Image 1: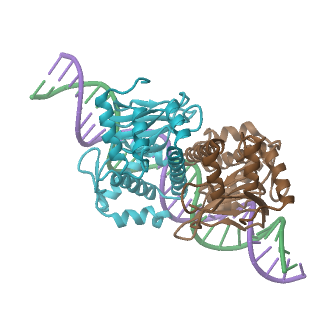
Image 2: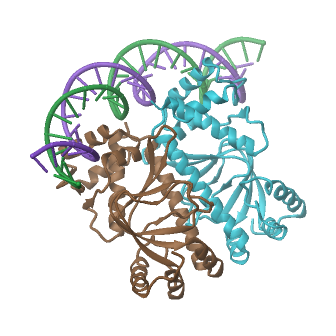
Image 3: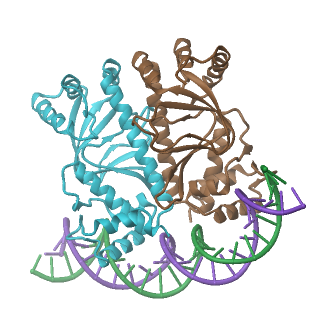
Length: 244
Length: 244
DNA sequence: CGTATTATTGAGGTGATTCAATGCACGTGG
DNA sequence: CCACGTGCATTGAATCACCTCAATAATACG
């Protein structure tokens, strides 16, 4: 992990950075070539299986990760054993960035995935040197914060249909950021995951999906896929029309 | 606003910084004397009345504020006119820090308050110079993020009693950070504010308070004051005993 | 003192949950 | 190839928690 990446990996990272610089979320976004190169020197690609943990709550936060491919969930296990899902992460998203010594939650993959691991010490050393990275980290943190607060607002006073609609639109936005149309979505997470995220039971989630299907808002061509058919309808539900 | 603070104010800031350096949350925490002085040079004290706005959603984010005294709420106005309260802030808390160009939400005072205004340009210039401030900002942002995620977890699957209990404990923690016992709390916000924060109606909030009073969990000696009588009971409710 | 604002309390309705049963897809082993 | 088990999703019926609507009470303020 601490050793320099072999040439082949370094090259894949270079191209990776090339692509993630185009995204509005990646770690490299807005960095100049030198910074990007420095970053790729400190990083390594890791392939992990579905249900694998990127890290666990309480682990020493020795690295940050960029999700290259796949999908992950951030979660905290509650005292009574249930899990609260904090959020989902998609390709291009940063995972595990914190100012604390230990990770504040688990990061678990919902399907096979590839992550780009960046050593924290090296990242911090770099961020002291070049203010570009340091500023970028702050931006990312602020963005995460805004997203969390957004979601908070979303969650508190929305009906089950509103929550699921908002969730689907979030999924759509994530897909769009990665170049997809936003009409056909991968839905790698289970109903249980969605429920734990939205504060609903499995059954409620299932019923809402069924209602959306009946109402012509979406289709599910197969397990793990959704096609959104009525964006305006979903937007309306998510925006609180159906708040109560 | 852009002019240097008069000597009297500067002195009060010096003492302010002295006190806030003791807190674990203030902007100055962990900064050395020189940094603290530089910071006080860039700041000014402002006194605002209850219901006054520190800033509004969409305003250019030209400054960050430390709440010196009083209490504030952060909120977003929903399309249908209701307000979603993102969070409450208490003395020592930083308000309005963002990486974006504009504030993402309103900041409104729930009672008369004093804030310490720091010009953003100066703060950023300083943060480029001394990495102490820059790192502190990142820490604060990460802390806010953790708090928001914590609250998210709290909110989603808790009963009304659990939510109010969690809210009271949050208030207690804020009071403790400012040196109070945590038993007698100021409760400057209305039931409506609490409801908008917790995703409950005014009536539900009122009923929960009534139930807590009947159950001997707390007393309300007067409007705007609470005395917590049964911490373990409240903790139990907040921790999800009464999850459903 | 009267008015506005905030808080409380009750009765009834609605939506999400709980409990329970069934369906469906997938992999495994006979 | 089919029987079986497992995990995930769906659906139904009954319950319960919170909301809505409405009236009253307490408090603050001019």
